[in-house]
Image (tube, rainbow, N blue to C red; front, side, top):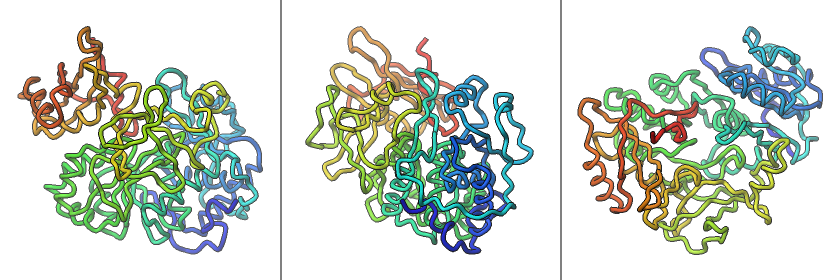
Length: 482
């Protein structure tokens, strides 16, 4: 295959490729530092990367990929049990880390390679690597067991990034700003490898804050990647931060992912800046499946249309494909294409269960599709599909309706057993004013008036905060009905 990073393996120039805080590397310096890493790895088994938000992490991953070695990004916040499982499952030959990083006990028996971003070495020629050779092994969060290692081949990385370049008109002239962690697909593959494949530049904020966003977009950056929590903070800050509004208005592309961005945040940002946030949909095993296109309609509440090369269908509970899309019929998303992972490491049973006999991957995500192809996610099959009174109801649309109420700051919706309805709809609310939250009846009427009476919450719980993971996703399994 062609190189994953032609701008680095060709004739790298002196333009800045990576910047983390006040530290930066040009294309040429990145190529040399990655070459030094690759020279120490050979072509052995996978290597673990202590994935802090740093230059060293980016150099380590690029060096491994150029050397044809799979990288296993490790979350520095992982607990001992989870980390131990990942290490025993992936069996890395070494761990790459920044000099001075203190590594936990679970890593002490592995060879440590300190990544020197000032080192130089010949840039490996990665074109000899095969399309199906593993590039990354990314561990998914285990909801019903230990995390599973999704093996992402080189073709999947190249395919998804090239499809996004088509959809987003992404070029080497773009400068991307984000503050995402580098042990997930969003921050690492899209947020670091994406710009480097295009020959562009990344400015990583380290820790997210609206001042950093305003500063970098105001200083010539063209794209912003974030998760809904970040965009929610941006929406809240816009009325009192005019420089933030100006900076966002000047951006070429604002992209939200990893979870659904509530419609009311879409509208607040658009009203203040004149710019629409676009959403895309992907997951660890599939990388990116759909997106609102840069030249398409930025329809709030949808994740756009299938990307080039991606086959997507909705199916009924029995696996029957839905053939007529009406914007209302709920089905599970299944996808097929070169962007898919090759399987779960050491888990042939889980791999087989994840695919249909004819090669479609079962995402477990529920959606509706408009007649023109736009996809709207309504939730996870396991936690967000509520069967109440004979209806199939997606939690996502109820959450969006609740968030339109002025007294609601955050909302999550789940189902719980009900002797009459099968399941009843339960709302978990963080109110804007904890001293005077809206009543349960008021919220039920609010939803019924916007959607339909059968979609109103029957039970409302008020909380100080919703449980979230590192990517800002609400952890619904942590919400107790007791």
